[in-house]
Image (cartoon, rainbow, N blue to C red; front, top):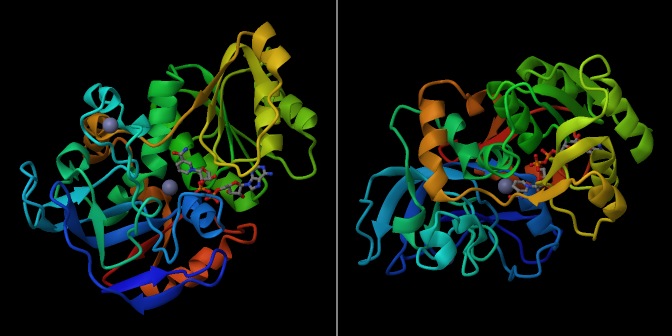
Length: 351
Ligand SMILES: NC(=O)c1ccc[n+]([C@@H]2O[C@H](COP(=O)([O-])OP(=O)(O)OC[C@H]3O[C@@H](n4cnc5c(N)ncnc54)[C@H](O)[C@@H]3O)[C@@H](O)[C@H]2O)c1
Ligand SMILES: [Zn+2]
Ligand SMILES: [Zn+2]
């Protein structure tokens, strides 16, 4: 089968033919229909994840069809159209049983713990616990982001921050995760300020429902906090209720924590290779919550898939670029430099 593979971290990934995988007893092989290009793929390629072994196939956001299933799989059949959260739980530990597979200690992740979905086929472990059935008529572009960026934004806002209608939210970074966050925050009825350094991304954020935007270029973290708070000066002058780091930068976390009102909640989605410094005295004095958000478990998917089926959330509107597998190496390398365009790139395996 065709796959995008790299032998060394940060060396140009290559399109090659490799052996097709076989299904483990409790797992499946998926024929990939489409797969996303997420910045976490770049973190994997850049060597930021010590668990990755080389050579490696990236890719963790996907929609496809079950090509073959292990003997232990009972809930899904060959030919069924599915997606999967990028964090796959073991299905049996106390967290999985409670519907929190996103923190399963025995988790597997396509594109990280084993070869991923930038390929004709990908293995998904513990299929009964992790696969999510997808209606035939949903376009692939509406489904791909549910594997990672859109779902993580949904989980971060709804479950971790419990964002309520009328609350203020500041979204730092308006790439795939950030624009997903803006779209979902708007659907929840929040008041949104979006922050980025790319004017095209800020324009998209406005179209998707951000009332205010701030370009962070040349602003210190302290000035950025003040600028974000100033956007709500007439209604909420004491700071914002929820901040989301959808980027992964120590400076951004500092600016976000600095913009929070008393009892505010910060949601950390962006991965960062270095340890950030958190203003702990401010966290204590204002009783702030600093919340991690790590994908979303299959147990939470029915609500999200329903909202997409009802067209109340439209992840497909975030997809601005559809490429073929042969263009994926270039897409990976393009993440080395700041983006000028906005929206998500997905790979259509049929191209
Ligand atoms: N926790 C999780 O489960 C999870 C899930 C998905 C993605 N992630 C992580 O989330 C982050 C975002 O992923 P993505 O695919 O949306 O990335 P992306 O590259 O699409 O988006 C990043 C955005 O940040 C903007 N930006 C760059 N520098 C900035 C600055 N100084 N201030 C403000 N904005 C700035 C960029 O212009 C871009 O719009 C990555 O670190 C990714 O690995 C984590
Ligand atoms: Zn588990
Ligand atoms: Zn991702």
